[in-house]
Image (cartoon, rainbow, N blue to C red; front, side, top):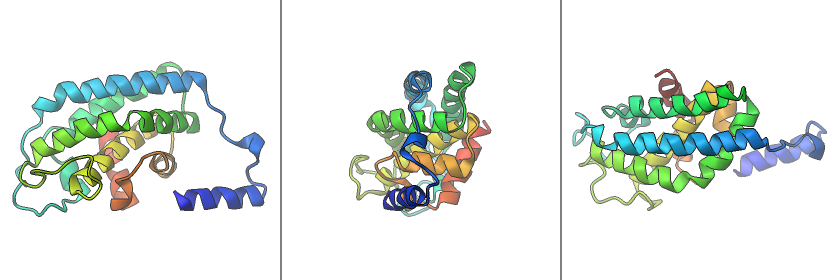
Length: 199
């Protein structure tokens, strides 16, 4: 977050951005983000019980890579279904690019706790041995980091599916989330986001 604020400060000093060119909130995109993210949360909640235990559970330590986490049986398809629903709402209103990224960042932050709880439950069902006894709200646990990374990848996938570039989407979304993305390489998170978006 400090890097992003410093970059914005230098852009203002250089005259690249001014207060007048700062992003203006788009009311329609903001409402779309609220509606779409609430619907996507329902999709995840309804599919929570369909996720199966990963064959890799127990073979690996608790510091699972994001690729293995996202490879949990059913997780990518469930996340993809949720993301497709998000993107379709923005496409209906012909919203795309940074307007979508800003709206997703705003509502993504507001609904973060609900999503993290559901994603944490899904990850615990997929990797019961690896995440046994961990609290998704405890910042010191690998479950906290993994749930945030999956959530971040979902938001990035939704932004990419709505016309924002992958790196730009990562930058916008990462600045709005409370944590978790810093535990993984940007390329890992973007790679998972692209797999989710491709569903």
